Length: 178
Image 1 (cartoon, rainbow, N blue to C red):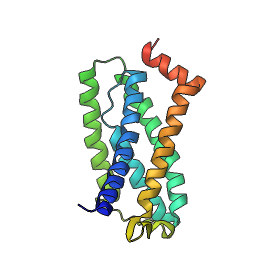
Image 2: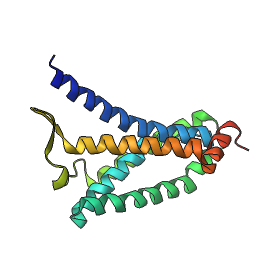
Image 3: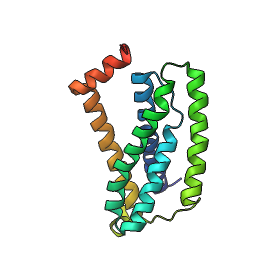
Image 4: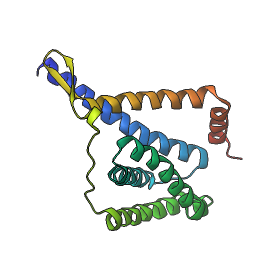
């Protein structure tokens, strides 16, 4: 195996690992703070991705599409929490697993009914080309951005949880909900 191939695969692994970290950190915080098993957490990511793709196609701007999708996804999550998930807090974990698994199926089918199974989204022009990491070694620029954003969010989350008053509340809530 060449060094270039190894480096590319290492960067691919880092990018995928950071995406999994962001998903898992949300699950961990929800379970740690609220003692709630929400298997539909990934379905909310999917809703956000489809909203972003839809809004990018409407606004013809990648930046505006993503910036508008974040608060819309947050509103969807807040509505979901206040209407359905809140009723599951006092139930046992098996009820939470079953209800949120059903929610995965419902959200998947709703997304399929609204947007179909294939909503096109291209990388913005600024991120569409490769970057030369080493002489002769090219890597997609959008993947480097994902790595950078993932590392920045991981650092931000770490600093918020360990260094702020809100982070102390989160840690205290995870230790003792009352």
